[in-house]
Amino acid sequence: MEKTLAELRNLQQYREKEVGSASQILALGLSSRKNMCIHPQVADEGSRESVDAKCRKLTASWVREKAAEGEDVALCDFYEEHDKKGPDAL
Image (tube, rainbow, N blue to C red; front, side):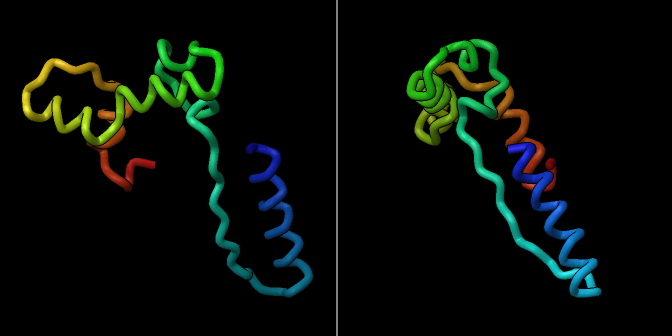
């Protein structure tokens, strides 16, 4: 991921140099839960499939709805805190 983003920066600099103006590039870097998860119990799962499954159990919309209704279900504190901050948090 880091190498790809570095290459995009290099491409942007090259285009600015050769074209002479700042041209915009729209890029979106995607990664799996396995690479992005910071929840210690989930990240230590090992395989991508088990990380995905455990993450889904803590962050799925239906699980969060149950928690909002007062049911005692486990949620991902990291995800909940990020969600509270909203889309401008990044």
